[in-house]
Image 1 (cartoon, rainbow, N blue to C red):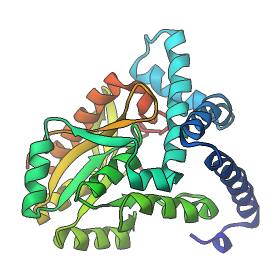
Image 2 (image 1 turned 90 degrees about the horizontal axis):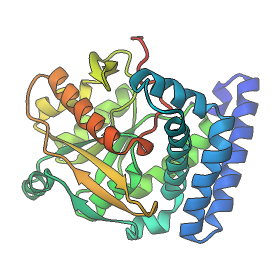
Image 3 (image 1 turned 90 degrees about the vertical axis):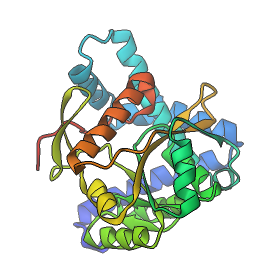
Amino acid sequence: MQPSDLPPRDRVGYYIVNLLLTGLIKLALALPYKTRVRFMGWLFAHVVGPLAGWNTRVRDNLALVWPDLPEARVGELERGVADNAGRSLIEMYSSKELRRGDWCKVMEGPGVAAYEAARAKGQPIIFASAHFGSYEEGRALLTRSGSPAGALYRPLNNPYFDRHYVSALSVAGTPLFARGRRGLGEMVRHLKGGGNVAILLDQHMGTGAELTFMGHRAYTSTSPFEIAERYGALVIPCFAIRQPDGLSFHLWIEEPIPSMAPEAMAQAYNDTLEALVHRYPEQWLWVHRRWKEAG
């Protein structure tokens, strides 16, 4: 979408929001790397998140899936989720560090051997990930390790911010495919040619299958699994897990999801992510309306 396609009022609003966010990013980028990451985490936890209404969304989602969670823990998660989001945003824009790989060097997990075998024989891979940890750091490690991973992404509603956001995404790997019929077709051609792609599958998909996540109904996309079955791609769940220092990551690679019905594969992905969210709840973006109705 171009700014000219928007109603004047929306255009002005998006322009102002972009100015504010861009200013914050430029301010943070002027700081030393460790300081900028910590600063953006603090800013999102104590200013941006509350002003954007994130605390309410996080609290509502937690009340749905963990209704007995103590109030003190709910508050910790409100701040922790926003902190991780702020850190992840500025990490994405820190192109020098992302290319060098200063903070994400470790690749581990039960699926590493299968990943290396697929890479050795040139089998295309769909890396099934989520808004968890710092997903772009993980994709950058895959690219540096010899498996350049393009990405299927959802264009942002704000067209001003989307321009430099897409540019920041490209640092971790290309090509990028915008969600939609055209982008999906380009992604399929990329996979058919032996390429790899990373997809974040943890958001509500109204046209997806009625599956479960965290014990509740969650409509989940099955298209990536249908594509994998059709074109012989291996589906490997992988997630960049933020370490206790708040700055470094380990890329956790799960066993590939076995070939079966697309709905069963999508549920296996949901189950894998659910187990990880239980272990590291602050690292998943609880802000999403994950448990919406269909449509």
